[in-house]
Each structure stands twice: as structure tokens, then as C-alpha cells.
Image 1 (cartoon, rainbow, N blue to C red):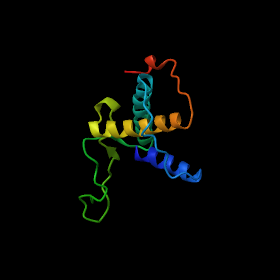
Image 2: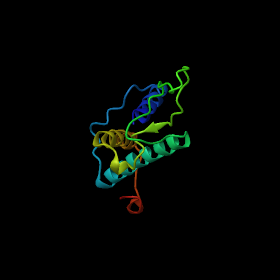
Image 3: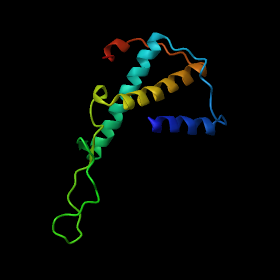
Length: 127
């Protein structure tokens, strides 16, 4: 989620804007549905990228600094792991909320800048 916020900040700086105050933007229910969809989709895209790099789920990350048992200083064959490679609904609440915050910030910014967001068929994507 920080990655999404950082990209938005960089774009705004290139446009000559440090930050757009969106505190006055009120989201409608359909926008909240969109926020949840964006948050879930952001996580699922991230997870797909990680798996494409060879990561798999494990409750804890493997320690890349472990040496093998041969004592010759060689590295163990370790699998790239990440404890967040789970469906969005199984993420710890703090990670879900972080993604929602980034998505809400994006939706509010788009609305503040005059965009009209009219979701037509979110029902098929909402869980």
C-alpha cells in the first residue's frame, strides 16, 4: 500500500502539487464498495507478482543468511517465502486496512479532481 501512496505522491510532485487535501470528500456507498474492491485487487496483484518471482506462502520468512550444514560457508538452498501470500480476507486486519487506506485516498483524489466514478457492475466483483 505504501507503494501506491508513494506513486501518487510522486505524480502530484511532478504536477507541481505537494498534496491535495481530500478531507472534505465524502464517499458514497458505491465508492466504499469500489475502495474495498481496489484494496483487494491491489493485494491480489501484489501476491501474483510475488509468486511469479518464486515466492510461496510460509508462516515466517526464510532466513537468507543461514549457512548449510557442510561448514564450508555455502548457503542453504532456501525457498523465497512470505507470510502475506494469502487471500485478502485472510490478511491481518492492519494489512487489509493499509490497502483500504491507499485505495480510499486514490478514490477521494480522483473525485476531488473532478472525476465521476459511476460503478456499473461491482456486484459481480464484491465478495
